Amino acid sequence: MIEIEAQALQQLITLRQQLTQPCAGLRIVLDGDTCRGWRVSLAWSALARPEDHVVDYQGLVLLAPIAHWPYLQGAKVQAGDRDGQRGLWVELQALACHCDNQVCASTSTTRR
Image 1 (cartoon, helix red, strand yellow):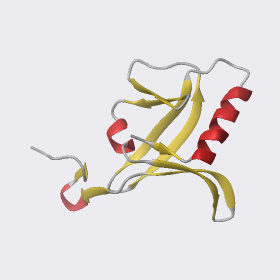
Image 2 (spheres, helix red, strand yellow):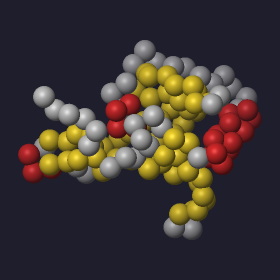
Image 3 (cartoon, one colour):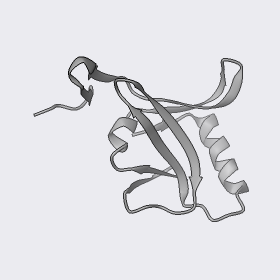
Image 4 (tube, rainbow, N blue to C red):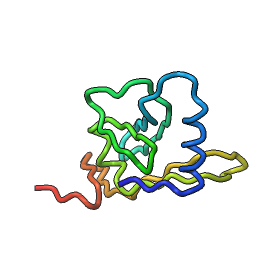
């Protein structure tokens, strides 16, 4: 499960309440892979898609493609400053990767 720090959760709920357009939830999308690294995007989404996994996190609806959800397990969302920039930061759980043979898997996943 994703963990959202209290300050970040409050900021997101406040932002959600200020939206004037319909909103199904906060969409989380990953781009990249375990070997080259991930880029995490957060955006408000008007609609849930059929390929989405939907989670209610203490009143905040999170949407993520089902295929991305395993990589989001153990992720932490925090609010604060980094490198002189204020914002929300998503830290993904460390994953095991054997990039030389293109095998990437979560450390909590057992391959059979």
